[in-house]
Amino acid sequence: MRQRLTARAVVVGDRAGTVVPDAVVDVDDGRIAWVGAAADAPPAGDAEVVALPGLLVPGLVNAHSHAPMVLFRGQGEGLPLDRWLREVMWPREARLTPDDVEVAMTAASAELLRGGVTTSVEMYFSPERIAAAVGATGARAVIAAPMVPLPGMPPLEEQMAAAVDLASGVADDGLVEYGLGPHAAYTVPLPLLRRAAELAREHGMLLHLHVAETATEGADLLATHGLSVPALLAAHDVLGGRVLAAHCVHMDDGDLELWAEYDVAVAHCPASNAKLASGVARVRDMLDRRIRVGLGTDGPASNDGLDLLADVRLAAQLARLARREATALTAAEAFWLATGGAADAIGRPDLGQVAAGRRADLVHVDTRDLRFEPVGDAADWLTHLVWSGVSRLVGDVWVGGRQVVAGGVCTAVDAAALRTEVAARAARLAR
Ligand SMILES: [Zn+2]
Image (cartoon, rainbow, N blue to C red; front, side, top):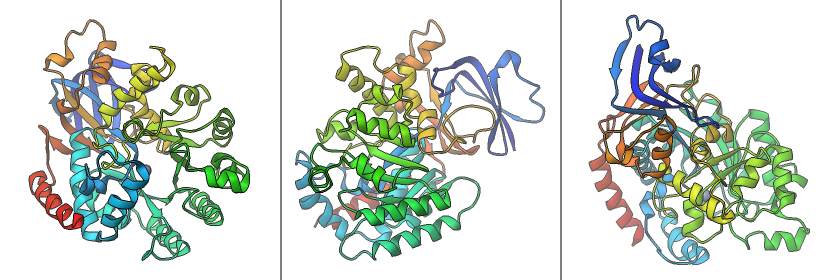
């Protein structure tokens, strides 16, 4: 089906912050066929024309999430990370069933879509149930099958083989992709990290792990091996291929040089890092070294939202505060980190920008609101999008050309019923 969407402006989602006023986006068979000014548009032909009273922006790409943790939102508020994990999260997760994961992910996926997030990188238990959940809402996900040595889980070698099996069975519509998610160097033995990296390279899969989230997590490894975690990963052949490292807060210059050398991408999670007082990642230094960076919400129990557009603003604020420079991260760069930059970071050049040939993952933000006034020139659309707190103005969302949110309501699932079900399951898990 061919569709022509017209909008007051298109924000492309590129590094330069391109904004096209009075724009047209043509969609054909799930892909963007043409983008540009209405005055230059080719004839619409038999396309259905939809006139939108706002901005069209790319579907946001969440580079790091454990979205089913909506079940644990707000739990253990104010505890330090180690007590929060041991006393609150792990006991609840020990009682978690695959049905819990699917229901929670369906609800979280609906929430993500309503906030304009069309793709998320998910690392959580029961990966095939996460796939079923996004299948229900119509969203996209890259699901890094988690590998963590927990009681009751199969051996890590078996977990890896199962993940590779899952990856071989997916459709080519790009809606679901599987990756490997060995948790971190301080929880997964190095030989298994090396094996996971080998498998990921062999099958072209994303390898997703946590690195340098807190100042102390690498202390034991440093004492044993005399190397920082990034150096240790390089020495054990874990780097190279599609590697996406979450957080990367505590990185010295040498660590960053290694990331640049091996083209390791970073999932920067400013809201989680702020809430848990982990620190502020060196985003400007990463971008200056051409390190690929995407923004992530992290799990909703450590954010506590899934509002990536709000985190765009926070990323710019923290980057500027950390360097005391108002130029440390521009509005255009901050938005790019959640769109085109995030797509690059996760190795998905088919996503993240409103550009011909990319998949038609599109978000309509209604601009009939005081938060979008005044607009003097085209760049103001992007400035307001980043700074004015507009995620509630997301009205319509398409994934691969299919409308999954209309007038702020998910078209495929019943969000109110899901909320009730999440509440009941969360209460059971908390007991
Ligand atoms: Zn995480």
